[in-house]
Image (cartoon, one colour):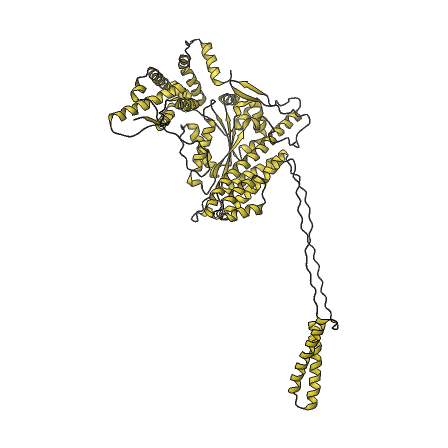
Length: 589
């Protein structure tokens, strides 16, 4: 009866509506992030700027993705907004790298230092050297700050466009299955990469039969809020048109736009009566004579005497002939045309002020359509000079990233400790307001054991071998945690290194007795028990509860002996050696 390592799908790895099973070790930081995200989707809060820190490989990006996916499955949010994951590459955003092509901003000064991208190899990681802001004059500082903010807003706009159009494209594909218009849905996914007119968008929504009910929200006629969403398709079209136009602004230097409509009115009425000179006039004259004769004969027949018959008949004949000929030869000419001329030339303003006004509007319209953008600024641990550039950027854009959107900044433990150290500096105390929440990602032993009990599965039976296998699976969980030093990426790697059956790679090729009796497994199991026992010490537990980052330091210190043993080295018990080891763990040295 083998132990099976259950496989789970990665978060956000497929279409937005697909059902996938996922499993991650939960933490207090995850619960806090999920609670805030639910409130943001419910429109209970306008936005949050969240600092998410952790050791490299702690699973910061995976955690945010999993929270976004879990919240998106919440059916109670269907009439509010579902979260939309918007990825931003931190080194480009914060370091001021113009990845969209050098559009020159209005605030940019000729003396502004150019962005430099110096790649340095440090501990196997590529580092991006951010441009150092000049301290010569206040004007240059403000120019550099404006340049960073402008480039950041342009990248944010492009990332929002990519995420929103991709999501809508998947939903349009799903709607096309119901009406057998798959080719048109594919064409939409190609066309939406360019700016589409509102009339074109309306045509797509109409052909898919979603012009009223839309693609995102599920209609619920019993809910009062659904009255606002009665034209859900229109809300989506407005959002997509706005995002597409902003995308064009962000990637283009200028856009010229002209429109024209002609309006000219001319009326002419012409009436004329003339003698018959052609066949048509001859026919009209003959018709007049016949009509006059008929009328005259009718009048004469009703007269009382012969003279009266002659007189009245002749008079009626003449009048009828004249009137008939006049009416038939009456010609009316009536023409009507409209002409109105108007020409407009638009050169889009890509200055900081224009973008600062535009981006919050985009976010609001996307929210109105049913998606709540979650901006995730990743890979910030690869930016040199992060402290200075984050301060420059957030001083300019705090009102957007903190008050009008949900933004997660993913950093390493070094920046987290540096930021918390600002508490002792009055001059830099404003930095504490940049982030509404400061979360440190680290799992406690209880969190890890809960995860291991789910990922190491033993089939149910009621014999003695099943009890032995359950015991072995429990012991194996301790062994893996010890070898991984309770580090997320280490746990994943240790799971992958377990020997597997050739016929079924999910089954571990280890018998229960082997797991329980192998000396290296026994040593690791006992070491993990000792670590968890020490972590339960009252003084250490209180310190960890008050300062989450200290738990990571405790992990590093407690696994110091095991780390030396695995390398075949004798432990050095000097304080200096231990300090150097702990500094090395932080990534600073």
